[in-house]
Amino acid sequence: MKNSKTKTFLIVLIMLTLSTIGFSQSQTVTIYTSSNSPVVRYVNANGDYDYTGSLLHDIGRHDGNNGIRGASTEDIWRNERSFYLGTIPYNSTITSATLVLSMTAVSDYSTQAQVRTIPYIGGLQTGWTQVGTGTLYFDNIIYGSQIRLTSNQFTSDVISAFTSSGYFYIGIKNVNESSNEHYAKVTANIEIEYIPPVQVTVQNSIGSGTVKVDGGTYNSGQTFSWKSGTSHTLEASNQSPHTFSQWYNLTTSQPINGNPITVNPTANTIYQANFSTTYSVTVQNSLAWVSRTTP
Image (cartoon, rainbow, N blue to C red):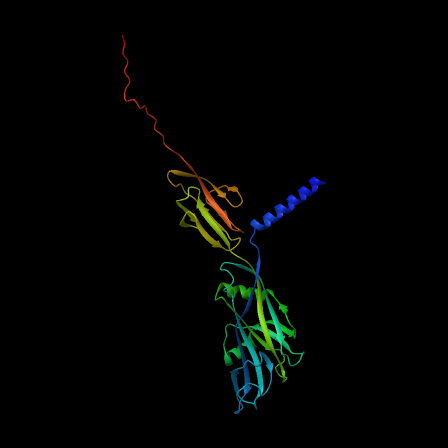
């Protein structure tokens, strides 16, 4: 019975060790709204549409409350949001993105929201219009708190924003904009799961010289920040008077055959090129000559 418990303990320990050193651990970060731009469109005294910024509501309709003209009609709020993704480490791999919405100060519990794509914060007329024409992410979102929404397209667009400008944008509006006094305040965050980049050091066992990494030449001991699981090529060359012998993964204590080699690290790793050294030794007699006397 004691041996069985010991074996179980060892198996668990091995599994924990592998999960610690074998793979980068997924992390979650909450990205809060960077900018919140509610815009209200209303009918002015001339009977034309006009636009202004107003923090009274984020979405919905509330005639005569735009803050410019009390007798206005068709006062409809739409909302633009931006999210800065720069807090996620460069070269991370985003695996999922979830929009978390909370609606408060709701005039009517039947108020429903929808979320659409927008290319940027347009402001006033441009912003108000593009919120209504963007591709639909999520529709018929009912009043509530911590409403979690995700889709493959939403995650894909977050990834594209992360690898390009670093900013992600959405537009939020009420589903029913024809009914007066249907409005709400909206809180929006994005929860992002990602695998951080791996830190990889490439070095020579002799502590000096150079190595080739992905075709470039670097001094021994260079550390790289790579996207987890991506493929890279390492190549060693003789460093006189040292001769290359074999690559070695110092982190896992495993030899790697071949040169060059291709690696796909999923955890922080040290790759070392091992060398052997050949010495030339000259042996000579310390006596310049030897004489012998014969009687």
